[in-house]
Image (cartoon, rainbow, N blue to C red; front, side):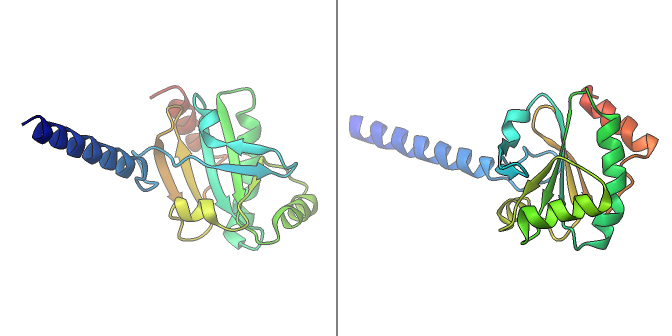
Length: 171
């Protein structure tokens, strides 16, 4: 009888561990926890998403060769400036195979700067299930994806900034 109870408890523990693992691997969708990642910025410094809990994080996948991305960048720069000093972090994740050089050249030519991370092998983009670029995930201060935006958006529009500020404040 003790062996049966021990076997049942072992199976229950294994089943619970399996459920916990499946839950941790939920797709990057609205209402789910944002998959954690660590990518390097343009200076080579690693940036880990989970260290940004407590902030509203805009995770934007883009590429220098993508026309809608290039159209969206100026509004992202304006948004980033408007959110300076607030509990906000933008992460512009480049999927360019050219890596750091391609992004730095693009920024230099356009006279812009953004907190850019490099995903040259597309590993993080695949974890997020992106279907193209630009694609953006708005992650609330608790680490939950609140909004997924496929395609370009005017991130500097007053209504967009207001909605982001409400999310930042837990609304």
